[in-house]
Image (cartoon, rainbow, N blue to C red; front, side):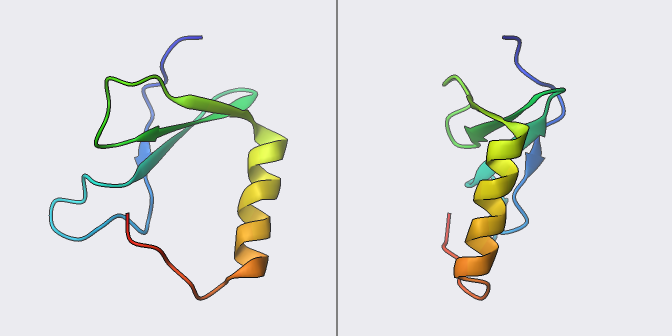
Length: 69
């Protein structure tokens, strides 16, 4: 799998330079996830449907809770 080039930072990235959080990239059939502090590490990849279900479950379970990155 090639590394995506369209990385987006989480809207909940920590303050300051904003370089200490999770980034995601959309691929044709998967969502890639990486730690913005460890760019040399391989990203994780999830099927789009599974990642969408995971994010929706997070929103349903704790809509007002945010964790620092």
